[in-house]
Image (cartoon, rainbow, N blue to C red; front, top):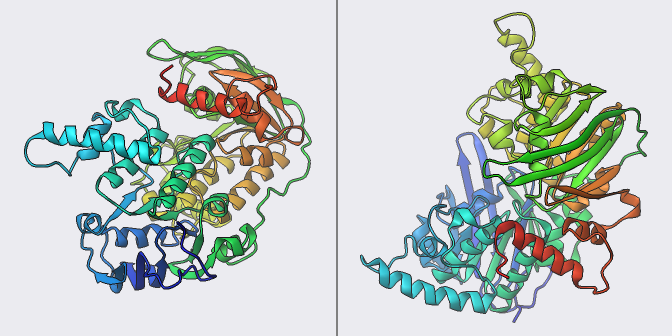
Length: 540
């Protein structure tokens, strides 16, 4: 049963499940949270939104005991409490699902669920108890997952279920989810929302940290907005709009669609014929890909994660061998020999913004200015780098790409996700490439940075460059791309013009369905089958 909400998100004559009063937290000179107060009512989904670096995760880490506030008070169900660590938070019925899961990959689902919550020194009774409880929780909340599957063998959607089950097993009735859809496909995100609905209906209280306005409008009852460490507003979701929330987040009006003129395609820049990739286990990942990208256009590549898009980017970026033919501006590209590497690709005029910026795009412990030259540090005739000039050039790039804080001497790990992405984009776009490869350009990026990143990609297209865009966000593909190609099981299922298709048709192609089915639910079933097939969750 839902608690009635007024415009301030407060229930009527009911103590808040969570109340924070005057919470402040600083890390050295950086004030992460400034005198924050918030009330979260029981049996509701309360969204907290804000730009990267706004202080959302810090605030929730204080609530979960990872950090201790410098000042302020925490109340649980009307009673002041002290939460010095996560065990204390769990004792108060609080569970947290982090953006980057805290699972031991070689362990099974069952072993991960009981880890740290074993009953005594004998493991077998704990496992038997957990297995029975896991079945009860799975049936009650539709959180079905194989208890004997290893974490390393299941997809991220299933791993997230395990994290939720871990919290419920510890009897949490307040759940904090930090950017829960950052690594999920649209189909997995929709399934998560159904689970959250079920949890709310059963009386659980959920705090959802996100920067995605669609998710806020779709799933929450109340939303609080943070900006630069402060709480700027709390409103009932039914009484606001995406445009209003975006303005509260950023402090200015934000365009929620991509503003671009029609494309003016020129000569063919990239030609791919019969491209094939077989992995180390002998599994074919690309099965004869044919594709072209012209100057002055953005080709969007849509598909459920794991259907060959990543392998295609790796081949084009020079980090994976392949067979077939690739030509750039009519010149053949070496796919297997001495000159098949990232350096030779860059020499041909290919720039690459990888899908995982932290793993493949940056060296997190190195400074921003060092990261702005990686991959291009061997350019030029001299053996020694002019570090002063490089620092000045990096500072200029950071200013042009609105990187915050604009300090090139800070390590990459000190920047928020959106600003890390801007550093990678600045490095690649400023090289004036003929072809830009962009993988998941706005994954984990706030709305203000998304607008900026989209503008830079469109500007490169308008300068006559070719762009190959890979994204699991269909909305991003449809609004940014000039043509859309869909991949399934290592093959191109078809191409469409954004103005002549929609998410339903693209979803069918993503699931391997090329014709319109008679059954209106066939698209959903096909997509679910595709997800299960990809993550090894389909059992006949």
